[in-house]
Image (cartoon, rainbow, N blue to C red; front, side):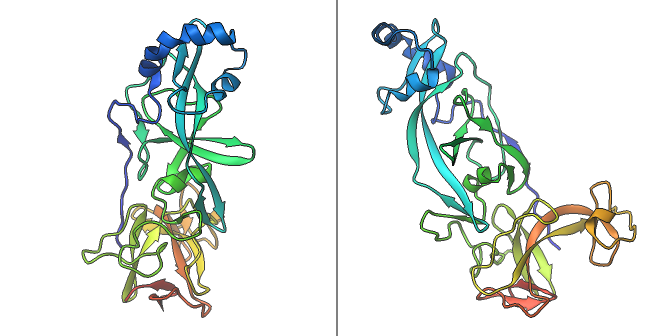
Length: 292
């Protein structure tokens, strides 16, 4: 069994281009007095910033009034039947917490920067920030493990293998062809980001990471194989007899031989133990779909 390991990396101390942080907002204070004089002291920073409707008029900073506005690029995101659906990207002038920056940020695997989220009029929206202040009302996404975030929609912009465009078509590299959510390893046996190479009897597949027992997995591109979040073993398990995962403790899971195993990671398999049909290009072997 092959194992793909992903690690958090520290981003360089820079701004991500989507929000200039305090340095840029302080440079905009030259026009602040004119705006403040014409509008008066803003009692609602978010409403105040929203009056600026384009990137040219938006940058604004006023230390006396403690208000900063920045033009922020946002992507609406939803999850439909286990697949990410990305809306049309948009830009808005948003109020930010001014006067603070950080020297960098921790970028989760597959993400271009640190993701933040908010719900606006019932719509989940995600943006990236690094080194600057986040918009008011936006919270940092919580990285759980590769492909898994809280909220789950945050992972849709971080090379999640289940991501689709707004028209429902699959995005991303399928590796060796076949099902784009469960690609084949390439000629060297390597898999795309957010997946792990899994060996089956006479076959292999790149399995997308998942969050644990019962967690969501991408559906098959075709056929009726059943997606299942499965634990993959590493040395050191207790070997305690079990019938299901709750029987195990200390982060262990119930393995296929009925004993508790130490878990290296959880990843999705397309199971076909009941005679289900695998996605086009895949074969049922050992109770799961893979590529011969």
